[in-house]
Length: 426
Image (cartoon, rainbow, N blue to C red):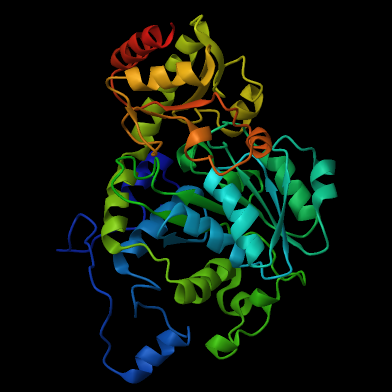
């Protein structure tokens, strides 16, 4: 299926039923799998044979969806996780241990910022945060001898800053480390980071990939292109005694990274996706290309409407020619970015509160990036754990409203915004 376009892969990749088999991907709701001999089971546990033996490590339903997402991102393999946060954590822990260092863009999702700033710091892994607009020289200056990876979001949540992926990748590779990119907002329909030098991609599948707000999940995708045998990643190139001395780069070749994160970290941390959630995610993926087209066209129209409204203090959407990230968005996401628009209302936080409380069709929810229009004030919710200085570094001003534009009729969306804006100005 490598020659198929993304919208075809959304429907067909990962699963081809045989004669008399179910046309729709079945839900294999089983924790365990039966074999005829103990030797067969032993070979599976020793990573000497392929197959399913425990759903924490792999499941037939999950396997289909992992293959589909890997195909969409043009990777060699993928691993579903229980959440986007679990995906980001495991992507880093797969190559970092206590005493190591990470360089990360500061313009990332608030939960990920706290994951790096607090949680992995408590594990002994230090993070240096850099501007998402850093030059290659500035990124190189942030590197240390013990730096093991660079992390960035293609399109930052919720600031919508577009990272210059090629610059981040070049700086990372000059230091001999991989670039990990969170591609949640654009999805592989609008951006494929591997084409611009990224090595590992993560997603919160809870967002556009699902699109219906029915499952929490994440995924890690391996490009298979990074050379782990440069002396900096012994966990991948030296024997793993917990698997009788297996060497991941020798045993799995280009898929060494994704094999290790599955066989080692998923085995030990247990942050697996449930088969039912994988089934629901697959249903969302089947219409992903269609939905992203509508999300982007609606969002651009909304951004233009807000930009022309005298009650709006500022609007940020990469598709607007007035956006400082317009050219980068055209480079990395030529067919559209996402359905999220951030803006501020004249009158500050009080006006923003009145606006959100006055919406009739759009709802105030923590979630973002599904088919329903919704709104949130990040500074007092998803990013409330950050200080004012950290909010500034993350590109999240206190008056920022995150509007996730859905796929409803555009006229209805604009009508709802118009009546709420009228009530917000006093």
